[in-house]
Image (cartoon, rainbow, N blue to C red):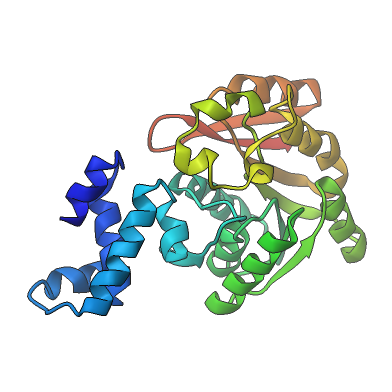
Length: 278
């Protein structure tokens, strides 16, 4: 019944969302939900489930409704005002692990535009010898990121900062450059807002979605222009791209003396841009 309701409301992944919402309302995980199909449901539980389904039917993202989203096998707390982690962003973690393996000492890694902290926290937990920082212009996002780090027992230094200036401050305080900068920056043109799903357009934070008008490459260009001063000679950038951004990323890197490389996500889209200085 829950799935049919969401299907009527035009929710694309109606079955998955129905399972997540109902299990959350019952205080179960998805596996427990299937194991307890014959369990009686109280009127209070039914009311909770109905309320969650109605919110999803209004196109509020499931992650905001239940307050979490899985990323790299871990649950991250999210709420309105913080970008919801996406599966394709996990590709940055995969490549970062490969790059940091060759450092041979404690690596210094920073996440620009950390949002929920999913990248910084995951890397802090996945990398055996690394020091992590995360920056974001949004104080609300940094608060959520800190909460996720504390809950998952990850050591990450978070700070509110605007753009590459926050990375420069980290380098200045350390007295030495970084080994890796990762980022999932805003890259959508504001004029393309109408093409986004209502779950994204109406609920997720504009500051985390939209690049400056007329300049979708703003943040990538900023990182390339400043990266030479922020990274060790062998250091690298890993930046998530929009689906039409790859060719421009390679050109921007070449113009600035970087060697660029593209990594495809599971959908075959050139999603992550890697750059090292020539």
